[in-house]
Structures are given as structure tokens and as C-alpha cells.
Image 1 (cartoon, rainbow, N blue to C red):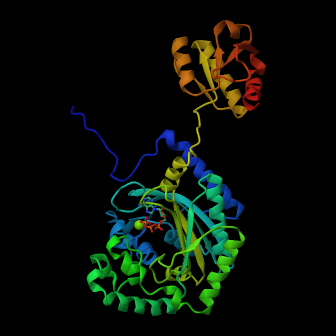
Image 2 (image 1 turned 180 degrees about the vertical axis):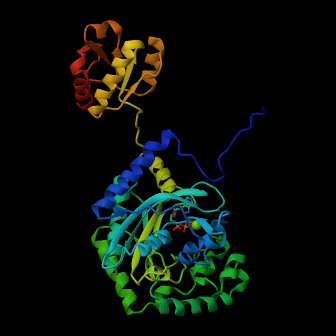
Amino acid sequence: MSKEKFAGVKGMNDMLPADAAVWQTLQQTAVGVLERYGYQEIRTPILENTKVFTRGVGEVTDIVEKEMYSFTDSMNGDQLTLRPECTSAVVRSVNEHSLLYGATQRLWYCGPMFRHERPQRGRYRQFHQLGAEALGMEGPDIDAEMIMMLARIWKELGVGDVRLELNTLGALPERQAHREALIKYFEGNQDVLDEDARRRLYTNPLRILDTKNPEMQELVNAAPRLLDFLGEESRAFLARMEQLVSAAGIEYVINPRLVRGLDYYNHTVFEWITDKLGAQGTICGGGRYDPLIEMLGGRPAPGVGFAMGMERVIELMRECGRVPVRTQTDVYVIHSGGDTQVQAMLLAEALRDAGVRVMVHPGKSGFKSQMKKADASGARFAVFAAEDELAAGTVSVKALREGEKSYAEQTALPLAGAAAAIAAALAA
Ligand code: ATP
Ligand code: MG
């Protein structure tokens, strides 16, 4: 038989056991913070009907134009898409289950998203987002609170110096006036526009401001600014949000080029950026999307949300030396098969009753090889269930690491009290 090697799909990563602790720390820390602000979990399927995203993300976006994994269900002809983001899916679900009837919702989600992009550092085809949506609340207080919540998450993760950029997209009529000015401005500079920009000139000129093409930076920097088209209400919304964010001691800069580029995004947009990750430095993006709920078939209600890229945040945690070390087990039980294995497994159960992480040596091997395994497991204590000791109603314990206060010498313990004694020594 020829040996065929199987590889994962390009741009889609395995999370290996060595990385589990950092992923869990990120999720537990973030969720711990979210819960302190009243956010509850929602889980939606990874597959949605394609139109949830063509509608919910917008036809003239990178995501819908070129990044979606869409296919026809061969069983029934349904047009389906692997979710490229979760806001549309959450809104679809909230509408479907009438969660906004006479209520507001503060929701968080966490899971894989799929975009057909060119894989590179910080950019994958399957990646993970942890995000939140605050639905049914007009802001700007809730927008500011969301920013405070994120600042707290960065602080608790120990990745302190991420930069906050804020902007406003105002309201629709203001954007329309700005859009006309933009089109005029770019029409007068056709020769500098790249292909993407020319394609977007009449469909989504705002998005041109978001270009990463260095040859267009000068042009884009001098483009008409939406800030100059804002009416009173939009200016007051932004001012109040800035006041609240400043009062919380959070630093930010207003970046007039920060856009979302879709007609139904309004008022608040923000990004959190780090200089430690090279080109893919945006670890989190968010904003207000008041018209979206109605666009996805719900009764009109406002909304604001964010999504962080977990792979990028984890890389930042690594850069900041914030990777938790977690061993596989606290106790490793060594035995010599037969009845001693029965006793070993029962003692392990008693330890687990006391909340201790325990591994019992599997199968039967020599003492030396079991000690090697015990050491490699990272356990703090080895427990020996040996025949002669068990016959005397005892087991013995020995610390495996330098500096351990209890059981530095191998110590016999009465079998009956062994689990409690070991658990106490671990907790001390
Ligand atoms: P970018 O400009 O980097 O493509 P985006 O505007 O497409 O980002 P959003 O749709 O706002 O990103 O997604 C929110 C966050 O999810 C991003 O700030 C980023 O941290 C993360 N993210 C987006 N796409 C990817 C990807 N392909 N791989 C890893 N993380 C991603
Ligand atoms: Mg993108």
C-alpha cells in the first residue's frame, strides 16, 4: 500500500494541545469581563443561507465580493455559506426568535469564521472571532461602555498598549453628501486610482479611503472628510461618546479614514491596533449598525458590536510574554498492575473527587519507565501504589519538583486518608 500523507486545508490551522492553555485563557478572561457587563452567550450555526451575508455584510464588500465559502447543498439546492463573520448570523437569530420584542439584548459569541483570503501571518482562511452585540440600545452610552469593556479585556490579558482609533460615520444623509463630494474628488484624480478603487468609485467610494495601496495614500489623505459633513445630532453623539471614553481614562485618536464602508453602518466605528504584529495589527474592530436589524427582516432596532481576531490577540499575548504555562496533571500514579492497578485507579478517583488532576499510568511497565512518564507529565507529585505498601494499608507520595514543600522525601500515607492529604498538600 502506498503511504499517502494527509494535510490540512491551506490557511486553516490545527490548535494543538500545547496551545490550549493560551486559547482558554483568552476566552475565559474575555468572557469573565463580558459577564461583568451583563453579556450572555449566543451560538449560531456555522452555516447560514448565503443571503444572510449578502444582505447582512453587503454586496459591495471584500467579504461578499471575493472571500465567502459558498456552495450549493447537493441534497436540496440550497445556497449556503460558511459564516465569514457573526454579526449577521446573530441578528438573523435574534429576529427569528423575536429576542428584541420588548427587550434589549447583550450577547457574546466565540467561534470559527471563514474567509477565502491569501493566508499570511495574522490572516487565515479559518480564524476565530470573539465578539459581542448590544441590541436595542441607541447609545452613545452603550458604545462607550463597549469600549471600556474592551479596554478592560486588554488590561486583564496583560496586552496593555493597544491603540484605540475612533471615528463616526454619521447618519445616512450626511454620508450621501460626503459620498458625492468623494466621487467628485476621485473623478478628478482618476489617474491615481488603482483598479480596486476605480471599481468602487460609484459603488462604494467610502471604502476607497480604507485602501492599503501606498501609492494612493497621499490622495486619500487629502480627500473630503465626513467629519466636515456631520449635522448637529451626529456631532453630539460623537462628542458624548468621546466624553464618556475620556472620563474612563481611555486614550484614543480620531481617525477620519476609519470606515466600514456600508450604508447601514452609522455613528460609531472603532479599531484597536497594535504595532507588535506587523501588517495585521488590527486586533479588534467594531461599530454601530442601526439599520441592520430591519434590513434582515426585524422590527427596526439599533445595534452596536465588535469582533476581535483571536489568533491576532493570541500572538500579541505571546509577544507580551503572556502565555500561561499549564502542566497536564498534578499527580501521576505509579503501580505494578494486578490489584495495585485497581487500588491506583480507585485512589485516583478519590483524588478527582477532591478536585485534583490525576493520571494513572496506563497498562503495565517497569518502575523506571513509569517515573519517566511521571516526570514528563509535569506532575508535582508521584504516588506509588506498590504491593507491599498496599498490603500494609498505605501508599507513598514523593514530590517531583525542586522547591516543593511537602513530600520532598518519599512518605507513606494511610490509604484511607491519602487523597485528602495529597489534595491539601497541592493546595498549600
Ligand atoms: P482586515 O482589514 O485585517 O482584513 P477586516 O476589516 O476584514 O480586517 P473585520 O471583518 O472587522 O476585519 O473582523 C474583525 C477582526 O477579525 C479583525 O480586526 C481581525 O482581528 C480579525 N480578522 C479578520 N479577518 C481575519 C483573517 N482572515 N484571519 C485572522 N483574523 C482576521
Ligand atoms: Mg478583511
